[in-house]
Amino acid sequence: MSTKEKGTIPFLSGVILGAVVGGALGVLFAPAEGKETRRKIALKGKKALKEVKDSAAEAGKKIKPALEGIRKGVVEKVEDVKEGFEKGIKVTK
Image (cartoon, rainbow, N blue to C red):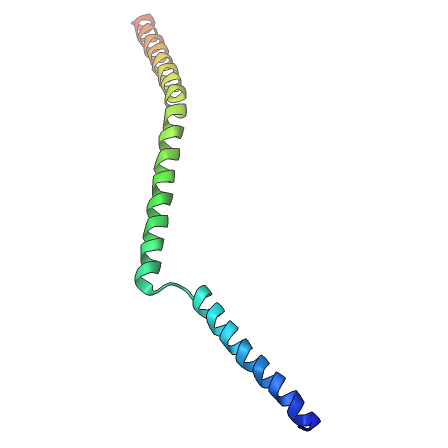
């Protein structure tokens, strides 16, 4: 065998091995088929929606007492204004 032939066999072996390894890795890391991808997207969407709903419910629980306090304060101020208005009417009569 000549020197040229000695280099050709390892080169071709490397090319073949590289093609086999590359093909195997391509199959392993290839994206899933469309049906599977859509299923995964739907599951992630449902999970995200549940997390948003849970967060909103938790925020509602925290905000509700504050809003109730604000509502009571507004009602009290409206009553104060109403009483003041009624007193003003009586004074002008």
